[in-house]
Image 1: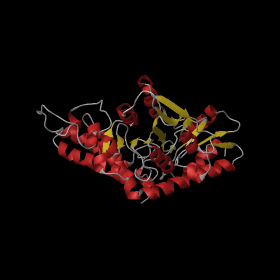
Image 2 (image 1 turned 180 degrees about the horizontal axis):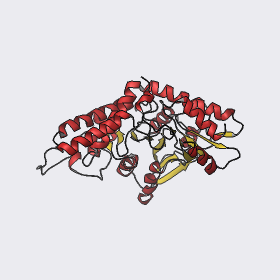
Image 3 (image 1 turned 30 degrees about the vertical axis):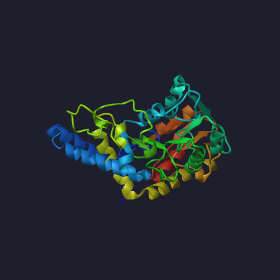
Image 4 (image 1 turned 90 degrees about the vertical axis):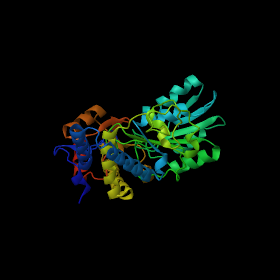
Length: 372
């Protein structure tokens, strides 16, 4: 059965915006509908069963990143996860951290907010850099405590060499933080292979889930070194003992989950990830890269269109950003929208982001509408 049958998109719609908010597969919509119907009919009568779904989600996420289940926390979004790391990290005045200037605000604002603690935020422009990893590492010095980067840059689609960055950070004693929202669910990822210390990603893009559920992974050696600033009943060792007077933070990643889980979102994301697991993340990546590569080649062959970003296969993921040589970006975006193409204005052009199930015929329609 084709994965495309899992999606019930309107027939006049060409959805090329997975880098923003993805449509749910049928199984996710059905899981959420069943959860809502059960809640309306029986309330929390079967709460233990809901927690079994939460555990399955945690296990799926752990497998997706090559980690242990106990090391996966479920938070609200990437911004919250980054903030947990940024403000829990043991900074000292005069320390600095390094990041790309092109980062999405989720991976920029929390770090900039550390200025009041005397922490310098060094932003490095990667656009046009011959060696983006070298540009980031060149800004690290003896007071650099952390390097943070998106696995794939949201606007231009630049795929970073995380293995190289992780090895360099480990050799320098610099913590390595990866915002993986633009690659988890699209490309294979292994926390040990990239030597990450912190990884976070929301589920509503390439993982095809609802908004409001995010992964936070913290290397066990760092878990107790992060100061906690969010507290509640759920993050304690004895979370079910509501009468306990004394308490301690949970020994596993639940210490970062202060309150009740978003079980509606949990049901949706767990179902979506089951589709990705059934297809296999390696096959998902192959199918997706074939589609983004097809877009890149067609755009580069067009006299009317100009590819923005790096054309090298090793630098590609699911994002392809381009512009028209004669139309302004707003006019190009309007032309695509009128043709039923859902895409975004990003990175000085129009961003297309198909997924592994997107029919090639729809890519052809989008390119023809753009003027290729």
